[in-house]
Image (cartoon, helix red, strand yellow):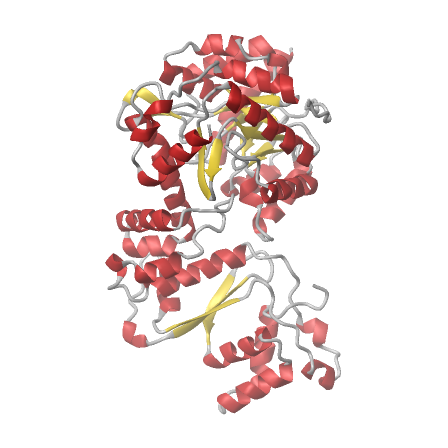
Length: 249
Length: 284
């Protein structure tokens, strides 16, 4: 009987049902295809729901082909498809037919970050009120780390602008690849996912907090690397956005 | 060994329910119609946090809930996945569902999750294994589960009928049944059997829930092969079979399942209302 499951599973992966004939009443071919189609289409549709911008950029037919190729290389292993597609962006980067779309993998990384932030653990972010009365020394020495939903991404392309217009606009804005690289912040301080383009100074500050450094050290790093940037307003803006982990979580 | 678990909770507050979709969260939360309940696949709520879990918390406070699993692979070659059982248990503890159910099917093998309800041969060897998997699940969850009959597309060589296989699982494990009337119709159509005789062979006292859904013809084989797509309204033939079923086994909590081509909430509720009316009439 273990044989039956082995043979059926192998047929699902290869699409060749001939070895199943020993277990079926009548030839398995056309009817077996219903199961195989459910399996492959189910995975591809799950990816389509998780990567709507990629689907919009390449079109339904191309997306189906790419998703099915991904399924063949990376079938799901966990018992839920909610976070299926962990390696999809890396796969897209090496997917030969998508090579001319140099921004595609980085846009996929942003979609993945959105999905992960959406399903991330619930936690209270650090709020302005939490730090308001603190003595300056105490505030400077705080190293709260990041809220668990925070994801930051860097791209050599204007990946954020491409993603955003394809996500938000019925008629997409034209974006020149000459616009250069962009950094992206995705996070979910409460129940709604938020996102914006990050400045290099923002990104540096966030990366230092993520590494466990305190606010003073992160601020000094910003001041050293970006002489034109005032660290304090930058810090307050990030604090108000709910980027840092709250004290009681 | 037959495990002893709490008997199926009678669910008088559960009339006709609907499969809960994120598009309808707010409408379901705010609805106050009699007998309404909601069902979800627990696998869609196994994330760390976020809005889905929060919506389900809120809806659970207003309506009875059923957790209808799709990924335990009870008809599989090996024992249920322990991690998955633990996650199911955690969800059951959090949401206190009135009903929990799974399938006579398998969906995972040798490290791959196929995400579909795959058929099992109805043999003695497979029955032994299936019952052991149900026992293990009911022990891990500390409660009785319902087992749903699948839609069959590919007939497998078997030693007994599906009804006999399920009835024996009920007898050995104390599990209940989730009778999917659309699946009965689809399977019997595809295998050339009589769906009314199928219903006659079901141990009615074990049925704790009924499913209704729409099916469609296979795009290649036409009406030679019906597919349980959950993508269309319940067909008239299935409503007729449902009427017959309720007449035969009495009113049972009934769910309208719809997974694709999702209609507007009012439209879905109109379909659900038809089932509710039949249940109310049967209650006299």
